[in-house]
Length: 359
Image (cartoon, rainbow, N blue to C red):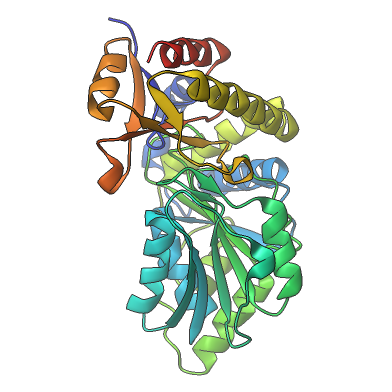
């Protein structure tokens, strides 16, 4: 039976080397080692070093592991804002980030754009009382991206506020300047081509100082997995509680594989494939590009409207062993979402382009 090819926005296609790395992990019994052992500290350190090289993360930032990226929404708000946050909302996930802040008792400001549209950051006005600015680099539900250059420009205008960037469905693609970005996070089941169950939180010393100040003032910043606790353990390449040891090992190995390709090459390939895919969608009789403004279109999660039934098209492509994502929420019947992640080969992209041309 032919293997399915996944172009889903997460969980996504497994990275081509996943199986061989998993075999090594099983052979070396990594699922049974202690997270207080020298062996675990070594594999945490390897993952840390490979991610720093791939994403250009400086020594001023820690690389921390959580159960998911969703967990980081909560941790970042608890540790980065005692009173007020600011959010750009243009889809289901950026909206949920905003809602987390309100549920945690913060005053959450938001600027909202219609589903499928982006923002003009030059027109934004962030209140001076805001402590934490929460941005979504890639809105997975709508296929809209906030370019890194605009994130950097906004931070330059508001240097005193902490900035945290959700890059869940775009990492390792965005070239963030961590001299400007205080924190960013992602999960591994999308662009890194791994099974779900691991979040990665990149965070700087300024963010840590804020968390410590909040705690000293009597604020609640969490307990066992507060930022100071995660940071203290990470200094020794450890975690406060037993983590996803297997996931951390696999992430380190895949990050090393990606480093052998090179971050610049990965970004170039992602951009080239996105151009091909958008061009094919625009030329298709059965599909249309959903995001109208080219500068706002995601390079990693492409959303297409269907002129017929989206579920019927998805089922048709499954018969060709091509699996794409459905539209999100109320768009399930009339949209598809196509992931453009590094795990897919050129040959697989070519098969998808053929299918798009016949849609």
